[in-house]
View (cartoon, rainbow, N blue to C red):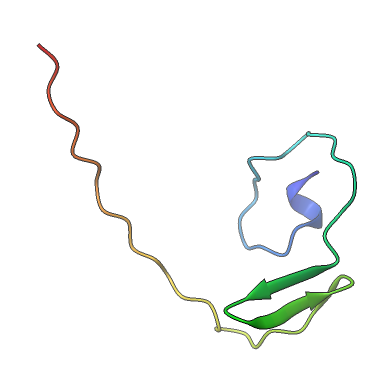
Length: 61
């Protein structure tokens, strides 16, 4: 796996360099097929940012 073969605007993948068996043929997002056999068909701007909140970790003694 490498970030170059993924449909994303980021330049890394947590799977970078891993060797996997098989490859997904479909990607489904919110009930809609957006990638079919490698063809990206979603409308641009369809995604949405999911804001993260800071993790509140308790202090250690």
